[in-house]
Every structure is written in C-alpha cells, then in structure tokens.
Image 1 (cartoon, rainbow, N blue to C red):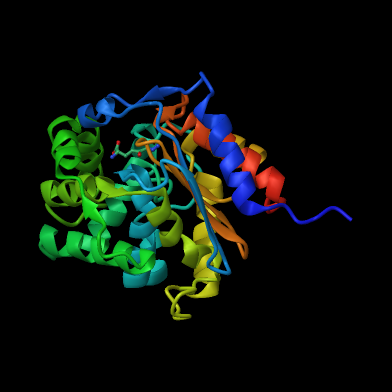
Image 2 (image 1 turned 45 degrees about the horizontal axis):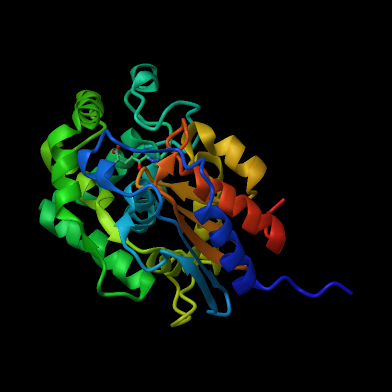
Length: 310
Ligand code: DON
C-alpha cells in the first residue's frame, strides 16, 4: 500500500525546485516600493489542521500582503454588517482586471465582488462606518494579529505611502463609487485605510497561521473558539475560489483546485478545507497580476497531497 505523502518533504522539495526556476514572472512596479523586491525570493509554509507546520525557503521573511488583506477585511465586514454587506458589493467573478472600472458604470457603482479593488474599497468603507481611519485600521490589524496568534505583525508605512502617492486608479474607482452613493465616508479616509491594510507585512508562516480558521470550519485551532460560523467560512472560501485570482480565478481553480487569494506583492493564501492553510510567496507575477511560481508551487503541492476540493 502506498504510504501517505510526507508534508515536510513535499514542501522542502517544491521550494528547492522553485528556487532554481528561471521563469519567475515580473515584479509589480506600479507601486514603486514593491518594484524594489528581489524576484529570487521564494517562501512556502503549510499549517495543517493538527497544528503541524511545514516551512521552506524564505518562509519567515515578511512581504507586502496587498490584496490578501481583503480576505481579512471581508471577514471583519461580514462580522459587522452580516448579509447587509451584499447591498454594497456583489459576489460574482468580474472576468476583468483587479483594478478595472468598466463594470461600475452599468452596475450602479456596486462592485462585482469584495476582492477586486473597487469591491475591497467598498468593504473598507463599511468597516470605517463613521469611525476615524486610525480606529478602523487598528481594528483590521488587531483582527489579523488575533487570527495569526502573532502580535508582531505591522504595517509597512513606506509601502502605504508609496501607494498613497501613486494610487490614482484607486482614487478614480473610489470617487466614481462615491458619485453613486456606494461609499459613505470621505473618499480620502476610505482610501487611506485601504492603502494601509494592503501594506500589512507578513511572512508565509504568519499568513498560513492567519488562514487556519478558514481551513477549520471557522474555528481557531489554538483556542477552539469560533472566529466565524462554519457556514461563513465555507462562503468566504467559495468567494476565494471564484474571485480570489481576478480573471485568473478559473485557471487557478482548474490547476490548483483550492480557494485562494493572491496579492501583487507575490503572495497567495490557499485553503484546503479540513486539511490545511497554505501561504506561498514569489514576487514575480503573471499577466493577471497573480504570483507566477506561487501558483505553480500550489499546483504541485495540491496534486502531491491530494488536496484538490474536486
Ligand atoms: O490597490 C492595489 O492596486 C493594491 N494595493 C492591491 C492590488 C492587488 O494586490 C491585486 N492582486 N493581485
């Protein structure tokens, strides 16, 4: 009888293979601070539902989580407003780029889903709901530290400032939504919180820890306490599967077969429900803005461990 695949061995072998590959994609340059990152970096970390951790490569090095933060802001906003959130943002794949504006004109300024930039800005606006930006940001950071069991997680202020200086497209999206009444706070407040939560810096290990509640029916495996209900965890995973990689979501589901959320910093958080939370980091991106080698590594890991949900 074939023995069960060894997780630590799989993680180490995949990381070694990725380190040597020449095809690494292109590092994002539209946020100037991200253009400085070394494309040779590669990290991989898996935390399974027994709490066992397997890590390899640069798994301890913090990177800019960017759009992966949208998983945490979606979770928080659902906790604050429940299903009323869905009047401010949809939950259908967009089939467009992450920073696209085109659908907003015909859809009353309501973004397609919480992971495209417009949708994440609308979600941030819900979290802000009349509070000061500093308070809303504190709430987001506290939540990320809580689900990761790690008080050391911080925001990279240089990355946030870099995006604040150059985020003209996001400003356009936010102003456009404001004109439809979809945003309720001052646009510069909402954008300020959005840029800062995208600039949270985490290592693969911290991110894999943060994703555990989604792999564990909404509960923290450390304390056994509920973070979200099992149904909500399933639904967040469903949105990650259908929208987490923008117009690369179909390809990711086809190849990896797991819910996942990417960020332009080159990170991906993937969830194998009931089995593991996985974080990978390789800064070079593909044409859709998703980590090129990150996706390939996840495809190999999922196949080797038999973790595809299909
Ligand atoms: O708003 C932006 O453009 C970035 N802060 C986040 C975009 C992002 O991570 C897209 N992901 N692949």
